[in-house]
Length: 172
Image (cartoon, rainbow, N blue to C red; front, side, top):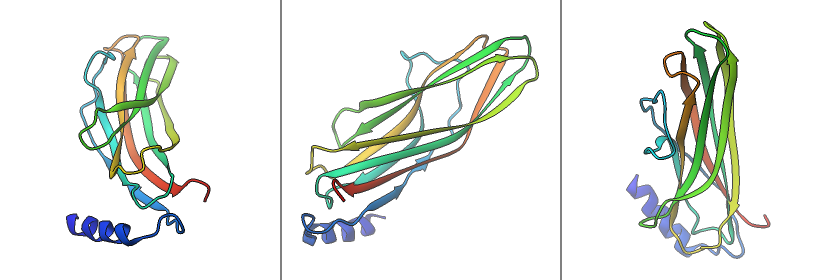
C-alpha cells in the first residue's frame, strides 16, 4: 500500500493541478464495534467507518462523503418504545485535532413488543477545502448518542455499512 502512495505522490508532484483535474475516488474502511445499549455525548464515540483522501493533486479541492448503513431496531417487550441515535461526521488531518463537521439524528418511535423495523440510513456531505497543502484528510463516521426509552426493551443493529470519498477540483 505504501508503494502505491509513493507512486501516487510522485505523480502528484509532477502533475499540473491548475490545468488538469482528475477526480479521486477512495473507498473507506468499516468497523464492527460492539454497540452500546445506551451512549451519552459525554462518552467516547463509537467509530463505525472512515475514509482517507489525498487532495494534494486537486486545485481548490471539493470532497463529497457518502455513508450508508442499514439500521434494524427491535422492541423486545412493552409498548410505545422509542430509540434515538445520533451520528457524527468528523475530519482529521495528520496530527491536528479532530473536528466535528455535522451531526444527524435517527429516531424510531412507537415500537410495540416483537416489532422489528429495518431502515436505510444515508449521509451525504460535501465541503470545499481552503487548506490546499495538506496531504490527507480522514473522515470518520461515529455513533455519539444512543437513547432508548428502556435499554432492556429495545435493541438495534447497524449493518451493511459503507463509506466513500470523492474529490474533485472546484468548478469542474
